[in-house]
Length: 168
Image 1 (cartoon, rainbow, N blue to C red):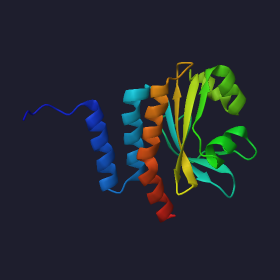
Image 2: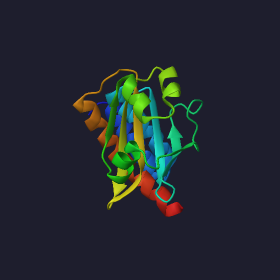
Image 3: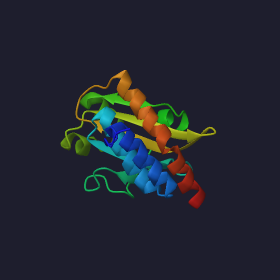
């Protein structure tokens, strides 16, 4: 047995576990962002709660609170993105500036941050979408491995969403 520090991936998992052990959903979102960055090298991570009655997402966490502050919200009524991610609970992948422009009203803000691709992961339990975990990258394309890593991050966020739902 050595005294070597854990690998970054193991340290990330330990940070997520500590946040859950302490009952801190916001700290879990931060730790999930840090852990996912090891795999995705994303430049922006946001986590949104889904308000099904209003067909709206409300930002709970942002790795860039100056550009995307927590509490901000977006109406997704009648949008292809809302149908795919929130209602059908399928991952959305947007690659390149044209896709960002087509699916996001805030495409100018996204472009100003130098972001060119996005993976939006619905977080669902028992057929109900609770929210999304979103990763935006400066590269124009993502790989299958990127999508897999983003899905894992979404799964890691499920306990935080469930805790927030219980507290509401």
